[in-house]
Length: 357
Ligand SMILES: [Zn+2]
Ligand SMILES: [Zn+2]
Image (cartoon, rainbow, N blue to C red; front, side, top):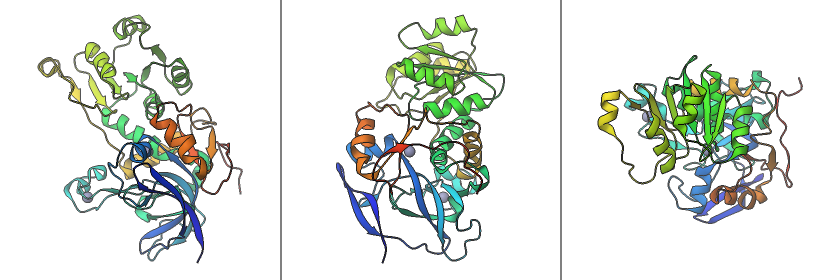
């Protein structure tokens, strides 16, 4: 029996690179040979802070791209050899949210990489129903490794209703804020980004933002006035109390606030004022595979090079020290770190279009 290496979370703080047998796809499932798998704050939290979603022992990894390598019974939506990305979230299809097309709110929702073995391994098994054939995109597998976080951004922007001609403010340009910048700018709206770090603001400008504000340098209200910006939508991505407070202070009548970052504690909100001002607050979580994945892959095709978001690909052995631990400590220099489970050393990511076969 052939084996593969896998990053298995055994308990909080106990992640091991185990040798496991290569899994076989069941009916309706495909096996994907992993090319790259990204990690995010969710992985870092499960590893370093406490189990929120993960049911150990489980192989982590929910942001992966690769090549279809075996098909289970009855699968005809993808072919062996296809370059694919995966939604990772598995919905039941039967409950009320599923029947209404809100599969991310499925009452029986589980996630590959938390509840089922994930993509930080040589191979992963996934239901064909959430495996997106991106072969015709021509994008490299390293670039396609950004599809899942991009789908989360696409979902947040879709939830907000942001459209061309409107103004948006994004507070917090971290792992998700950078992708939201791309998705928000792609609507044709003007985008003002706010962050504590000038490098992140410069990155957001390269990703399509119209203007940037270094928080603390000037008030948001003054900047909005100076730029003649009249926000329709605020994405509060930092999840911080000051971030939310800055939004509350300036939100105009009729605007929408999307709290993307999860606020800890219970912030006090001026609901009475918001009622009279018709301020909308819209939650957002994960993505709706069917609606958000095609757009996510399309957006990845709008830039040549994503090295400024994901510049390096590391091996499994460096996962904890070079990816999870920096994320936990808030000292990641990369927006996104990609892992190649087959690699023994790190390399530069290869973005853009693949050479034609
Ligand atoms: Zn993630
Ligand atoms: Zn369901």
